[in-house]
Length: 547
Image (cartoon, rainbow, N blue to C red; front, side):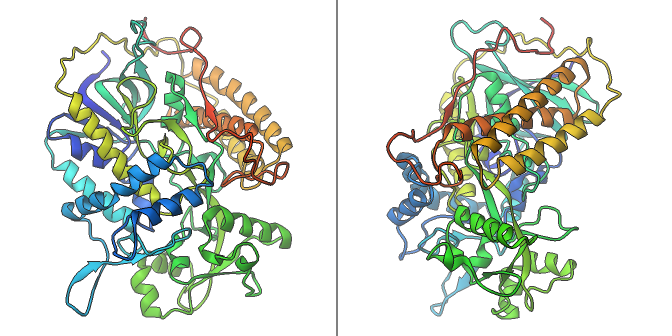
């Protein structure tokens, strides 16, 4: 007998967005949180830099809005930016009340205030942080509170397969409503049915689609892919942010060197010790990430080198050890003493600026389905994300979506009779090599053809390969029992197609999308957002359910 769960709210994802939303809902709702592995496996836990918010008298909402709009390549939605920026301080105060140990300074007056650092693209110091492990501090605090709440239940080692909608169940009556999700239990290898009055996608981004990424293994675009298959539109998938500085070492898997290192004076150097950023932008090392990443990519290709170097050793050893303890210890583990020598770094895929379209309440195109955090496209980032606006977006939209659900939760609701997952017509695979081979091929051609610098020919090659992979994976998915790797590969291949299609349609260079065929921005004929809408697939899609 298939297992079925019923909750008021099903939150898929346990990062800053999912956990903070759960806490804001749990007094009035029973909440299920789905995580692929331990809750600490998400991107939030590994975030180093911090959260941007206007917290000093020298700063202003107008300045933060202007910085976000500027870095966003004039594509950010001003109403969204204003909404997020103005709700920033109250969310920082809420996190402080929960006990997040943000770094602080004691001034001569004896008053203790938050220490604010500055990162690329910001005109003021406005990034609140917990040393260089802000994500860990936030994640630990949020999770501790969530686990103590009687109305929140964690389902770890579960991975979402697909959303359940009234349309897919043949009971829409004119409104397509999300009523739950099919979830793969990794322990018993069964697909379980989770019914919910409201479903929230907080699944993070899709940077694992690239060969080199700063993200953990779970960043496979699951929420974006599931929302697309359910009928949601997506926007701006061509804007993939590459963090300029990921540690370059054969044993250092996806370890990020925080933007704050450059914010505190770190210099980018060629192997001979020459600085180069001034040749690309007058802001030098504090230019936005897209500019810095392209500059590094250019120099690496020009010189045929494997990495460049980031040097903070001119600051005192005490300053470095106190401000960047995590980075200092990790580098020392690999024989690099950052108080005495530069850090070898390379760019790596870091953040998905596009995603599932939502409004200012986190609502998607499908009734009772919300998307928050990196999986959503809110309009905040435009063509490029301002450093440390990501955790801010998680908190603000978790708050907004929770308020919306809390206003609706008192409505009368009757759970529907949902069809259970049917695995009776599939068999165990004896060719898992197909999955591993396709996984490797996908990430390599996305890195080579749809990376920091693109061309029409590269994109066409990528689309051809993505189409072939999708055919293989669809056939495999239809015939064999699902697994973690197959679920993620299926999602990543779909997201790759969305990225390529979006990139092919933008005939200009702007923000994170740079094309050698269209090297300048086109202000006259380019739409602000690249919007993709799924075809109606309800009669075609292969869904393993009992009819």
